Length: 430
Image 1 (cartoon, rainbow, N blue to C red):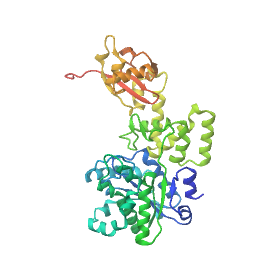
Image 2: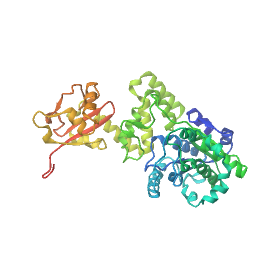
Image 3: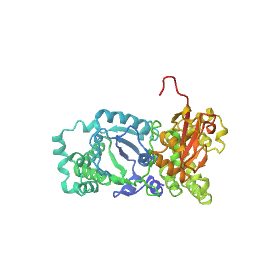
Image 4: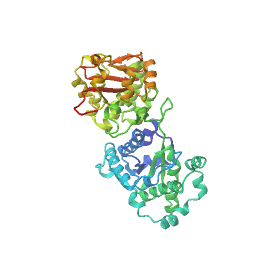
């Protein structure tokens, strides 16, 4: 099996320029993917291209990860309906550092002849003068050609339009490909389907200036079976940085994927073989309630991103947080395994007498955004206190119900846990 065959059976090939299958089978290529440094962390939406680079390296090809320190100052209009907020150079530099550390978990930077590299396109874009760029690069792009690109057409039809800054992005990305070809003999660019036009533009530029054939491999944009955007949850984006998304939350994200998505994601985001994935698919068909595919998915991806110890900690935490006898457990034991679960605090005095209305507890601690949302969720059976469903919106919580008088375990829906801690007021506190 060639790497193209591998990518194809995993469903990762959305489109490709002519000759990609053959050249990957015959030659060892240098290939690259660009990553946009708009945040200090990559997120799960970046995992498919990262895994594609890692698979290519395992088949002997040489991966380059470009972090767009230069293009990140401009902003890519692809897939965007509005102009991006431009970042400062200091913000981009800070974001690059976080991304480098995360990429190093997937790519081998000590592999010898095909060791991975991380490069910053600011190295060449910052040195490029406007006159040089217009004379040597801009003349190879007609305005008609650029207007025909889907990302540009979509923005031209909007009220906001598109600035010249973002309009120039296609040329800058093409110039990146040309520079990597010149410096590293890089002949293959990968990217999501929203990058298809930019990839082809780079191939065309290399052909025009060097008479050489370069290649593009387009990856699918990951979606969910329910039609929601992959990597977005009610709690927000799922980041690779443990400070932004805890390993427990990260593990739970994968554990709770839809049955219809589990096998697809095993192909996309793990290195499991076809035989292993087929076994998990059969197990899911026999007993979907056991969620064997999701459990393996959660373990594999969390291990890749955070390490095996984080998987063990996440599973210990889940065992406690979903224990029907959680009220019998010591508070110290609960906190020890669930330290990264959100833990808002309320004062002990608030629970004295008849206690505090549950709707007030939920809204004041951020479990819900308002009392009306709290009421709606309680009535629909979407709130659990100490792993017992509550369906009466008039319920009040008292200290007697708290675990050791110190802690309430609250769950919103089937996934979001909160540890509401009951604390004493300090002297002079509000």
